[in-house]
Length: 46
Image (cartoon, rainbow, N blue to C red; front, side, top):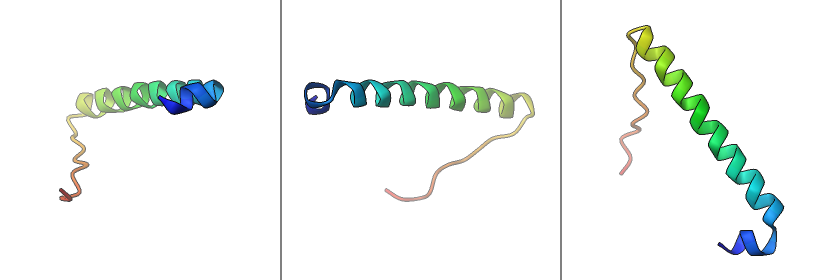
């Protein structure tokens, strides 16, 4: 990717942030499942 060539530090920061967001989403999803709740993020947009 271009950003990895032009600014590898920023590319690494974005990589770490996306990894952490995926972890948080998994944690929240598990907690909601344990409480027998579901979260529907479908906005209806296609």
